[in-house]
Image 1: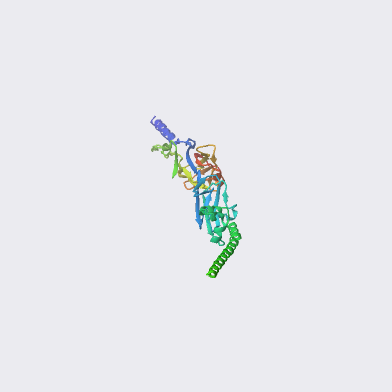
Image 2: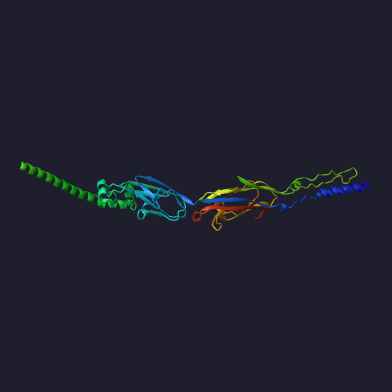
Length: 200
Length: 158
């Protein structure tokens, strides 16, 4: 009897030991996590303007523009001061001087900040006497802004052409007429003095 | 910087507990005078997966690093892997959700959908790529998207 109980208990122990504790991999709970992405698209864009030389830049017809509405157009117009011409216009690192139409450069549907670099230089063909007599705006006594605006729609080449065709000729004509007046005045004075001498 | 998702089986404690071994009596009367004992145990799979943190994408950036997917700890069965699947939600304008910015969830040069992880050495970097055209056409405002990473424990598929 004792042997039977001993054998039975041994069998039970062995049986229990042989049973694995099984947890299937499927029991592992799948889970998830979220990652949020955010973006801020600006409503306005910055306009950064650098000017070298004597002149100004109008953006959409206005001076001192620092930002414009995104997706709108930007019309960039360099404005030379009297006696200066545009040397180059660089927009976002690209020289667009040759792409200007009627003195302006237009960016359609602007979607990024604009960096404008403008360089003006002195007009070699410009002389102050010709400027004062031939230019209607400056001759009529308007301020420098007005005279600069009148030059807004001219590119460097156009400005140079205008200067070379009008200024020298006008200068010569003026010189001749002034000399004639002086000669006439001197003759008048001399004749007048002669008459006085004769009367005495 | 990284989010961690810890998956631990509910019965992990039990799994790592070895069964006690009871002594088998062998007496002078036993024949044969040998006995054997079978010892079994079961180690449950556990893993900790890192997924990218919330990220603010800078306007006009073509490719933004989001971080990487990797296992910081993994205990798995042979022929099993932890699969991380990503579902990229739309990047919608918060003021008008009919407006969206198209983007692609990328891992290197390929679009990312899922990755099977078997060790802690391998990391999968992710980026959110937005084309210049998509930026140019986007409307002003705040946008938000949710990328959902789902983790599962699967057979390794060849």
